[in-house]
Image 1: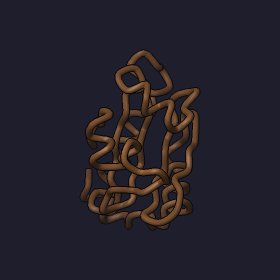
Image 2: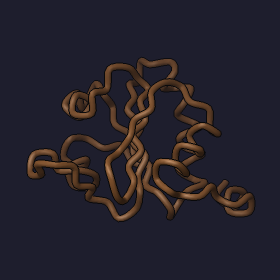
Image 3: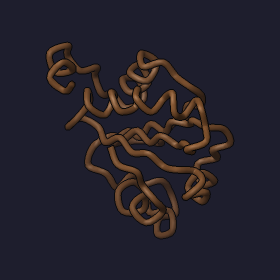
Length: 128
């Protein structure tokens, strides 16, 4: 799991200054957690996002964006409340979910919006 700023976001996810329309720059589907350190629901979601990163290692990228440090990114995706989770498939447009989502809801969204199946129990156990 990696925290992105404006520069690394442009390199790894979407170069919003160079591209006119959405064009994902990554090599795997991605989940981007928009958060702030002062946000209690964001802090509650952090360990769940960390578990997702471990369980889906090698299948998706998991990134975090601090909305306080990168307000331009938050504005670009219309983030008005946090936590907000951006689901980025390899093909098509990304989709956003807001609020403190349970782990099972995140897994469902990953499967439905990014077409990434849930990891097997053995793979999840090996990931930690």
